[in-house]
Length: 262
Ligand SMILES: Nc1ncnc2c1ncn2[C@@H]1O[C@H](COP(=O)(O)OP(=O)(O)OP(=O)(O)O)[C@@H](O)[C@H]1O
Image (cartoon, rainbow, N blue to C red; front, side, top):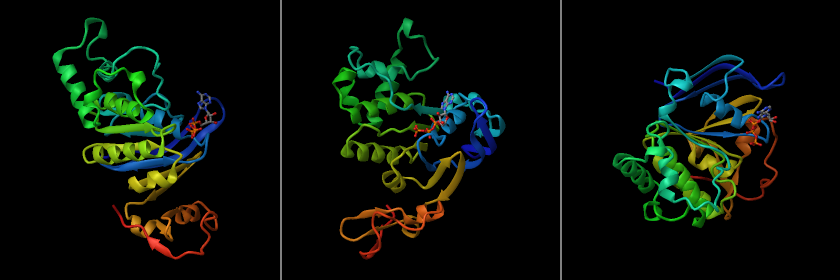
């Protein structure tokens, strides 16, 4: 069964059409990158997949059902997760919040939930920080904790909105390596501005700017290449697909070296 199936979807907040005639299929264990310009509708599409917004027309199914009926199978890491870093809350407590609707925090969490939260922290390599204050962590570590929180409910799909914004380059790579690892058992959908990084990890890319241009990029050797010694990533094929003539940043002065598929 397909993980996400979107057919002829159109969406408007008020009168302005934000997404038009979107068709998209996400198979289990795909790693889909949703890219595109500011205001193009990326976050809106994610919210539609989460059932937080309803299409104006067309349909959207998650594992063959309405998104709102499949929430337990979706892990969501929102954009700029708003954790008050001054608030003295521990990492384990943040992760436990991922047990939505299972037990009211007022009555505390049971052993099972705590064990599950610790398991999720191990999955993201943060088990040693369980008792640390969330405010004492780096941006990258904090994002790992947010991913652990989303993993608490054992989702089949993990959706992340700009997971590496405001994280340094090393931290960004670590997050994507983590997502690559998680992708062995979970479908991953990531909204990102960072084309060059995300395309290294994704097997599908959807470029959203009101309309959707979809690309299967699973064969990276044939899809993307680098130039010269500096391993500069060239997005020329993507630019061509989107209607641009050439890659401004690299020109064609240096020899082309195909990037091996990882
Ligand atoms: N709640 C809302 N009410 C009305 N308009 C909205 C609302 N949320 C977003 N929009 C508008 O919808 C359009 C798409 O926004 P969206 O956040 O989906 O884009 P995006 O591609 O995720 O942008 P960014 O990369 O800047 O996060 C924008 O023009 C935005 O102003």
